[in-house]
Image 1 (cartoon, rainbow, N blue to C red):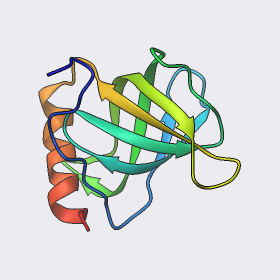
Image 2: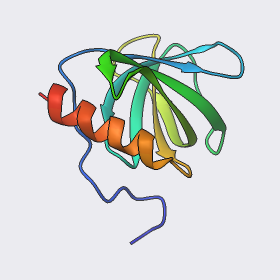
Image 3: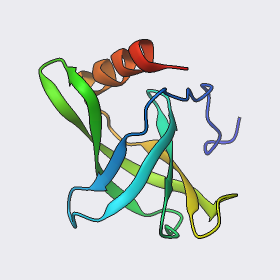
Image 4: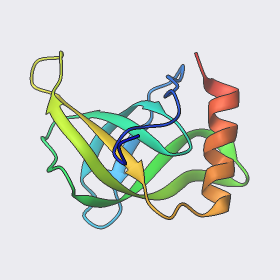
Length: 113
């Protein structure tokens, strides 16, 4: 399997969650789908493939005493969205702490469509 291919089927959630770059404060967009290995974000800007982002994902409710989860991720691809003026970007998480993985797993279980 190619190193860039995802292993898990991404899950869509019943809520739209904002994703922000922790370093710049830039809103990257809104979460489209997620696994414990990566996420797809729809946003206003084209993101360079290979770009590393230090992202913050706002949670819909407190999970594990947290209202957001911090994730480092590499942009695996970016393309024009079907929605005019927006772009989709796929991210692979990098060195995700165990606690963040547990939060994502809980998020998926509680809020998947």
